[in-house]
Image 1: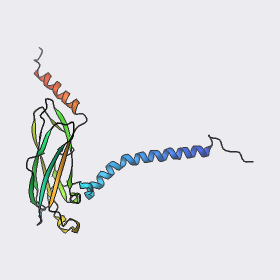
Image 2: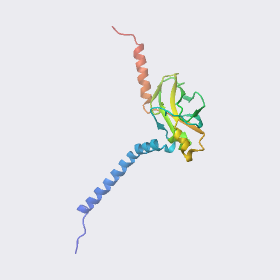
Image 3: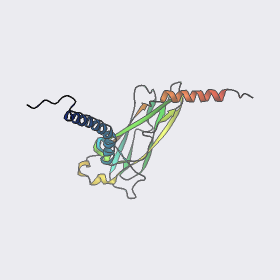
Image 4: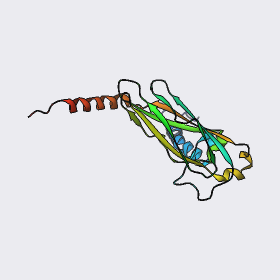
Length: 202
């Protein structure tokens, strides 16, 4: 008669190790999926993710496209934030620089960071930003107002895409969030100001 393996048998140990290995692998893939998904979006424009470029193309296209600008502020930041001008008209391939304006009406410094996207989402593959303030932390002192430029162009290749023939308006949207370490930065600025105001001790 064949005996039944105990709980501590080698076969059970191997099964347990395999399960643990699968769990670790799944967790690893979950964390890796975020940057991989971001790279995929940047490469394809999926989800309205814009492209990055060093410079505008030499040759311009022919299609005129209206670029509208939208701005939102997440709860907890307290800034006033919006585009300096609501929209501009560009020709594909034409580089254009616009600005968003942010004001901190509070009585303490606050640090924010912005995320962005464009609509319609299929325009993301053709909307190229040369320079912008997105993902860079911005610290505004109490009462401070700053203009933050964005330089962009629409790739002339949009004119040859049959799926994009109906795009005559693109909306660029930014949302500002309060940075995680904003309160710590505000305290550091306040402490630095207090130290500068104190008289030197001989």
